[in-house]
Length: 159
Image (cartoon, rainbow, N blue to C red; front, side, top):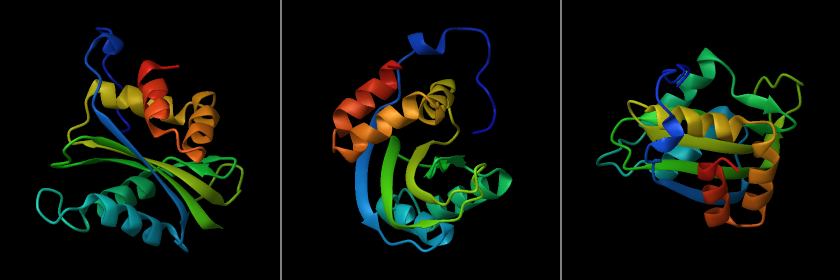
């Protein structure tokens, strides 16, 4: 999902992908492998989305370029074949883990974004909104409070 959307056409005028938002607090994951396996366990259904495929895509993305933003937050993301709809999974870890953050601070919260493969221009916009340094704290605050529907609406509307 590193490619940028084409410059022509207004992506925001197009239909936005349906986004499921969920919150998981106090997750025990001592490293990124365990974190990605936790996400895989949530998403993989063994039918459309094969077990292990989500963890593999997240790990491949992490190797290409780290997803930690700093301030204890990371945004792991991947495009997953056969994913029924986009998913944003907020995870607060029991203990922070190293994820090569630019400020060297360990990560204690993640906003994992999964979109369908191949990613659309709207998916790229969605990722940029999640990673936006102004949107990110507001979004995390909403998710901490359990306001998933409100957080998704704000995210999709670019608020």
